[in-house]
Every structure is written in structure tokens, then in C-alpha cells.
Image (cartoon, rainbow, N blue to C red; front, side):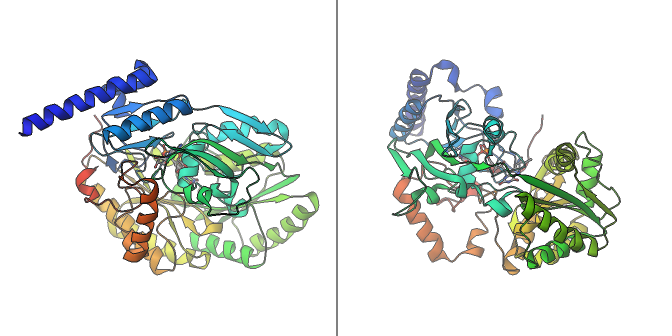
Length: 486
Ligand SMILES: Cc1cc2nc3c(=O)[nH]c(=O)nc-3n(C[C@H](O)[C@H](O)[C@H](O)COP(=O)(O)OP(=O)(O)OC[C@H]3O[C@@H](n4cnc5c(N)ncnc54)[C@H](O)[C@@H]3O)c2cc1C
């Protein structure tokens, strides 16, 4: 009986692959182990699950046809952009199919007068930035992964970035989108003007972690390049002091576009790498403050900011006088993830939020956890938003280290909740945090979220087990730990 079942399963899978190859062409259905290896995790290597196939559609029509066929076969599947996600969001359970959207990388329209752009989901964030720059425009959300991550992935995770302190996260920059639902139905959500008069399905999609549908085109808001920008870098003797400066700047009513902190471990990793930016290696922390706007407003804000920054006696104080100097100051912050990635075979970049006034408290706790566990932790964070990113360096081949890292992460997130914060700011729940969801929300709240999601994804076939707990225990379905790098 069992062997009859498995023969039937193999035949079903074979027919599915034949049909997918018919829709996409042979070259765009990957099944060989070497190619699949690249898709078995995202940037959070704590979780791995090798898909049975990866499909690479080029057009909306192909996405619809594939969705219908996968739905008919009742196969679990998930979208993937660049795979830079940090919560295991683009993984499928064994037997599942990954739909990689990187070939859907065309900017369909730029409307400089209406300050908007229509893009396919696989367009890389920074590629859109380069395309609209000649019109004096920009796309504000600027995740540190922006040279790689896709706009579809940014929308699904509601990505943030340094500039989002002033301009808001991705959801604030999306007017409308076309969505292919798990059964292949097409929906248009949002309006061309961005004005909503009904239920905001556009907003609902932002941050839904690829569990509601596939965004196949996205209408984005662009904003003008500022007239003037001023960037300060100040070095302080401790992270706690840098956090205090941040709270003071905001409490005094200043509205910088970015307020970013890096601790000494992060500074040293940057200065030892190709991302070297001339940061002060002896400082306990550096604070980057950027102010933008009209010439007059920047002039006023920058004098106020300078006074506050200097009143805390920085060991180093710099102001970028030219665009090149500004790029240089940011080079270290933007390259810090890559620089820290060199320190060990694997990284675990956490994401939690606390009220800004509790930043010093959470940093003290991170330090305690670091001392107790002996793990290497570096901190770089969006301080304006209270969004912390402790970065653990470890070796995923060692199951004990994996367990220690995961436990340390969970303790820090619990502390975030205790301090009045949240278990995620911008990386999503994914697989990583679904066990902690019940500590932030009541079971009634989780059930409600689940019921809303089921309206669009009733069979739980699209990206199962992400964002909300899977019905069967996720840890049984997705492989954790014990990774071979060989
Ligand atoms: C070095 C580094 C720095 C980072 N810095 C930041 C940062 O500053 N801010 C921040 O917010 N994040 C950051 N991230 C995390 C990550 O880059 C973001 O979450 C990003 O938005 C993911 O985009 P992606 O294209 O790689 O998506 P993937 O990782 O491929 O997918 C992420 C999720 O989106 C879903 N998805 C992808 N495309 C679609 C689509 N078209 N329709 C529906 N669902 C889709 C997937 O199913 C998955 O659930 C960083 C990551 C790294 C490695």
C-alpha cells in the first residue's frame, strides 16, 4: 500500500515537472541538486530545507499558469526574491517548490511628474534608485541589503532601512500592486492615487511574508532628492551614551532622516575589511546622524544637532562636507553586514524593537547575554526606531553553537517584549520567531490573523509555516541546525 502511494506520488511529481517545463521552458525549472543547494536557505542559515524544484518565471502569465498548476497538484510553494531574508521566509518544506522571481526584473514605467514607478517584483532596490536618480527622484526605503534585495521581497517583509526613521517603511511607499493568489486568481489592490476608500488590502499585503499571494507588479511612490544633506559622525565611549544622545536628539524635536549606531565590535570588523571607512576603532560606539531638507531647514537643524552631539563629549566628531565624504561615512555602516560575515562561517542577525527610551537597557542586556554565552556579538542598529540588530558570529556545523545562538536570540527578544517592544521590526517572523509569537499576541489574536490569511490562502499551500505557526510543528517539517558546509 505504501509503495503504491509513493509510486503515485512520484508520478504526480513527474507530471507536475513536465507541465512546469512546458510553461517555462526546460532551462527555467531547476531540479539538479547543485542548483537546488543555493535555494535551501536564505541569509539566516540556522534553517535549511532543500526544495524539490525551483521555477523561474519571466512574465505575469507564467506566474499565473504555474500557480494554477501547483494549486491543482496541492504542492506547497513559496516566492523568493534575492534570498537575503533574515528569518527563513523563502524556504519550503520538503517536496515543495520555490518560485524565484529574479527574472522578473524590469522597471515597467517611470513617471517623473507623478513621482511614481511601476516595477516587476524582481527589480533590485538599488537598481530602481539608479534609474530614477537622473529625474532628481529616489525610492526612500533603503535596507542595508539594497544592492541585492528585490522590491518584491522588500514589500513582502515591509523592509525598513536607515532613512525609514523619517520617511517610513516600504508600506508607506506603495500605491498599488497586482497580486496572483495561491490558486492563480489575479487581484489588483490599492489605487493609482494611493487614496484608499475601502479595506486596505495593499497595506495588508505589506509585511505578509509571501503568505497571501505573489506580487507581480508594484506601483511605487518616489520622493524628490533633498536640496541639502548634512551627515555627522560622532564617536562615544559607550553604546549606552550613544543611545542617550539619540533619545536627546529626538526629545528636543529634531527630525533627522537617519540615526544609526554601531558598537566597537562592528566598528573593528568594518575597519579590518574592504568596507574600511576611517571609523574610530577605539570608540565604544559611533553614531551617524543625517539631516536633509531645504537649505534653511538643514541649516537650523544641523546647528541644533551639532550642539547636542558635542554636549555629550564625543571622542571623534566629523561632518561630511562633500557628497564623497558622506558616501565614505555611510560606507562603513552599509558594509558592516558584509564585514561581520567574514568573522565566522555563519551569522545570525537578530531583529527586535524596544521603545527608544529603553535602548540603553536592551544593549546592557545584550552585553550580559554575550558575556554568559561567550558568543561574538556586534551591534549595529536603527537607533531612531529603537530597532536593534545584534549580530552573532558562529559556526552552523556545530549543533551546540546553533542551539546557544538560537537560545540567546530568544532571550533577547523576550527582553524586548518585557521592555515594551516587539519581536520584529523589519525582518519578519518567518520560521525564526513563530515560537515566540504567542508571547507577543494572545491566542485569540493569532487565530484572527490566521483566519484573515485563510481567506486568501485557504489550503496553506503558499509559504506554509511562515509568519504564523504551522498546524504541524514547524521544527518537524523544516530542518534546523547540524549543517554541513561541505
Ligand atoms: C546584509 C543584510 C542587510 C540587511 N539589511 C536590512 C535592512 O536594513 N532592513 C531590512 O528591512 N531588512 C534587511 N535585511 C533583510 C532582507 O534583505 C530584507 O528582508 C529584504 O526585504 C528581503 O528581500 P529579498 O528580495 O532578498 O527577499 P527573499 O529573502 O527572497 O524573500 C523574503 C520573503 O518575501 C517573500 N517574497 C519575495 N518576493 C515576493 C513577491 N514578489 N511576492 C510575494 N512574496 C514575496 C518570500 O516568500 C519571503 O517570505 C538585510 C539582509 C542582509 C543579508
